[in-house]
Image (cartoon, rainbow, N blue to C red):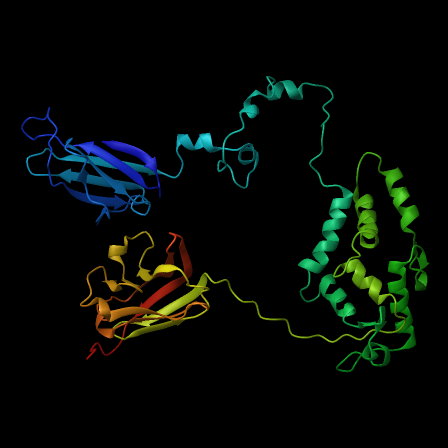
Length: 438
């Protein structure tokens, strides 16, 4: 029998077992065995052992078992059930990422969005009943006017521009970095922003700076021009009056914001809204209280730190003791267990792992088989609050591995049932010259 089901989703299966000589009767009291296989794409079938085993429901002759999400995370899964005195039966699962039933879970935003199509809560029934007109009816109307605009206003764009300057645009050579440098040239003197002694008296750090009176005056004029309502820059740069210029933009753009209106709004926004502590307008306002040259000193940028999940690459040698110290995983309090697992493919069952070791059970799997002793592997928590652990696997067990590459992770299971992947790695197992371990 073929069943269409959703991929990577747990599935409950129940079926009758019938007598091999009298198929009209269900057979009770059987010990049912299962042969399980999976395949992805056009590849070969691979055998696996399901976690759950078939069990009879009462004495009905109907049997049941649960298939986990990981066991159903393939393109096809085949299960064959057999028992002494009963006819064999089989089920082929054709697994899909989306089913027709998923259409019932759509929200209006999911249908209208290209970013997350068909992934929402419940479909809005009003969508299909808003209008009886077709698209052709709409486009044959001579005048089509939108009742609302989805475009941002000039004020919204201006607000985003000045926020972005201090939030993200702080790398070398950006305006945000320049403003940060300028802000560092001033200090608070009993409520009044003044330039530092270095800014007032010296050329820029490192020599080669130009602290001439002409350059001092130009910088002063530039800052004052930003903060005053009307000010003429030197060298006939021109004048700027926010009041009159804003009115001109409004009069010239009655149909809506255009490029000139947006530029005008950006400059107005700096002085009207962005004046709180830490904002770009406040920074420039504080600097404009001074009157002389500025001095700039550049420091090295801090090195970025990768996220916790980016564990990098683990390279281990076969036939050599594995000792892995991991720090900074975060709190490990209220845990039920910690697992460290390595596989060639993440889709493999845990029973086929290259290795799997847990805090509570020691070494559970080595090269898809049973280790000589579970005590040959361990996970030790060195600092529960910080999340520091040490993982070890003895050389005699590591000698059973083949030279290969794959994936590994550290998983935390808490007492309340919460499951978290704390680290993910690329795994490389390399060969050694000496294979002896004792």
